[in-house]
Image (cartoon, rainbow, N blue to C red; front, top):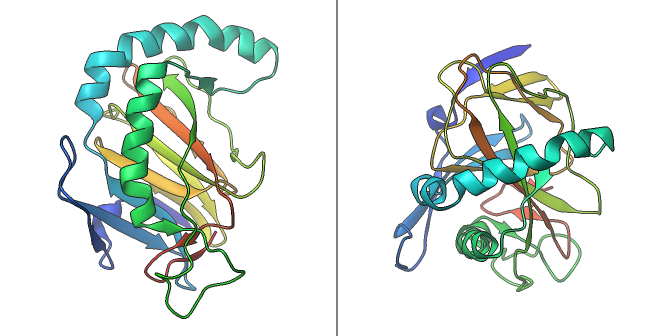
Length: 229
């Protein structure tokens, strides 16, 4: 079964998590959840309104870093994601990740889920391994892969700009392939073991994609009944 251009905004079972007012952050974070047929979540789409500030401050440096390293990395069979280690950016984005991810994902001290899912939560900092993936019409790398390398983990992807044609993310699910058209200012969150693939785009404007992997102290649980990853 092929699910054509699935739009997370069309999901009925969305929920809202209220968080305190912080400068440069919305007063509430909204998340749409896409679920397996069993009810467990496999994708979260979360408000993340930082495209403009990142493009303004870091896009030129990101482009320089990516294209100065990608050919060397490919020769060394290092994959298509290039690490991005710029300190100011990492400090900025790590703070933003830590403002939203704990609203939707928990790790528990004990094995399994407690009767009250708000109890027994491990307090930890979400520390990202940050990577860039850039593509345009004549140059893209489209292969199935996952991000599971060191143990239980959560992966996020964030598009600074969205191609007009193409440029979806395909996810390989048990009942077929789901094709997601990303949106600007949205953070997409999924288990790192989930097979996925960026698809080619037609337009020649460079698409900036910021990927991050987070290694968690225990198996991550998606709050509000989303299940374990």
